[in-house]
Image 1 (cartoon, rainbow, N blue to C red):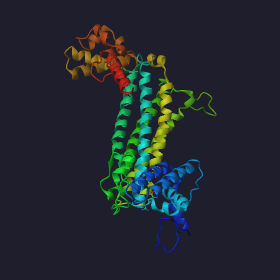
Image 2 (image 1 turned 45 degrees about the vertical axis):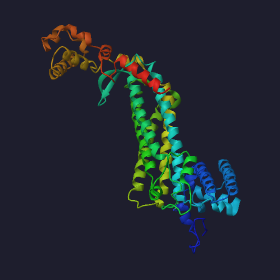
Image 3 (image 1 turned 180 degrees about the vertical axis):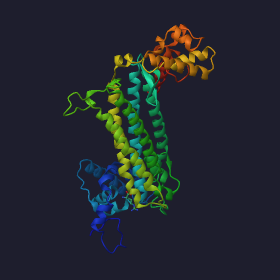
Image 4 (image 1 turned 180 degrees about the horizontal axis):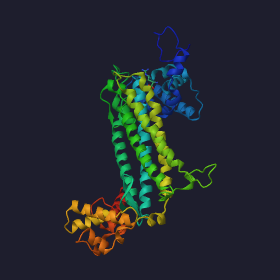
Length: 459
Ligand code: ARG
């Protein structure tokens, strides 16, 4: 049996060791120590301005908290389950050092608003880190566009060859996805950037605190309006976890695509060997483990979102101890996504397209069929008729195992008397790509404009 600082005189017994081990969060929330100290200093400064502690007491508290920060940084603080979490570890050490002065820090504060504030500070920084990594990844894709501008790739729908596109059209598709992720992160950040400190346990306090002052010192944009809400609120964790899940999904889809592209069957891309592994028994193998793990780790990030959603489901107002369980999945989602992004960047930068292999098979799969159909539409044929006619031509070419451009004049006329050899002028992937016109299409001029656009955006 032992006694923790949160147990008041009401307790007639110390806590059971099993509860201490069961209820501790120090094993994971020690990661909040810098945020906790920053929050405590802001709180103490406000208490002194409000004459709730003296200026001298504040100075002692600030100095000692900074020293404690150093102790934790250097790994000198021993973590003990009976002190439960990082908040009590820091406060207990302060009291050990300062006695009664240390006992004043928790004036007009509860761990409920303290945890909420620390997590917000941590998530705000973590969002900024992820955003920086997303920019680097976007730059890696945009950086490839120039060198790959002349490479035509098949675009797929249903993983069946569909229409030809320029390689940079693919790269910029990923840039767009990460741009949406960044905008989602920025949107979350606005709601993260609200200060709950001063909400105390759930109802506010009768002491004359200044919540605006602490919010300003901590760089928060707003002060949370409702103390019960603050004590219970983890929306900002959940929505951030959703954005991280979205990023993980985007990474996973890309990883899957490049895993396929790196196979002998596709042979579109060569991955950098520094990010691949070999096989102990098959000497020829170069395995895309980094991409496989990126795809695999997305499962954890999606699972974390699920955990968090279920965690807060059905909790009555206000704080419930369940909320302590939010940190492991939250940290894990950030750690996993950051690790995946850090590896995705060099892979995107260093992989090389297998130009010859790609080019040698571009006449397979009738990638130019739609171009021919649109040519016939331009000549006045109704779309449905043109669609049917080109389907017939593809059938004939498939039977003869030849591309559309190798159909003879006679075969063309047989399919439709209005057809002649002139339609060959629109066939082939290069011409099909040149023929695109619409905004957002893979027309080389449009693609160059988009590359330019992203270059400027990411400067
Ligand atoms: N370790 C707890 C957590 O992380 C601290 C908050 C405890 N609050 C309380 N009312 N018991 O959520």
